[in-house]
Image (tube, rainbow, N blue to C red; front, side, top):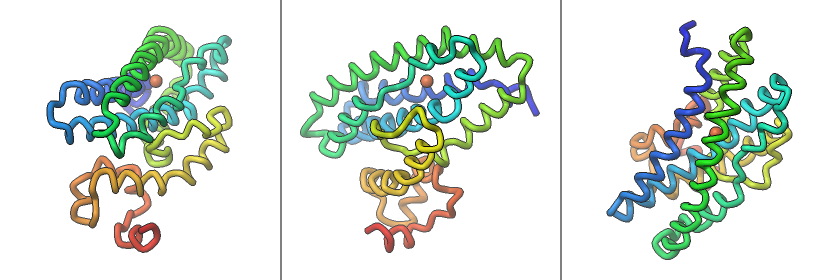
Length: 217
Ligand SMILES: [Fe+2]
């Protein structure tokens, strides 16, 4: 084990950074297709982050910190993300509405980042200094969680019930993939291979594009 195996603060902050990065790409891209791609990546990244925190980070905060229940109020609300997701397929038509919704969403996300990075994570880090096994477990869950969480926003998902949330994610995952593949214009194994990041969450299932086509197209 290395010291980074227990560095859950960096693991969470890295995901915050990734979402910010896609937002910057969305704002700065002059080419519309690049802008839309950044938007779709942002939706995926933020959805996965939101569910991973609900599954792994917040339960640990609640169990380890005295004011844990109060601290997890920073959880991301996916309702606004879902509104953007619903408009994303016809982004050209709804671009002004998307920009406005996204600006508001990212303003809220900045508050989420600030509260987590300046309050919640430092407190948990201090508490886990003598419980490194729990810290390592959290990092592992964050790394591996990408294979089980859904990649689209599901505001109706039971975020405070881990077992139900896992089941909701399991049920949503393949449908999410179906939508993602269409959005990225993937139509065969070869083009799927060009998007390893897109298919990474499903790599553990030995994803077979032909089987997928038979089942869902
Ligand atoms: Fe977060």
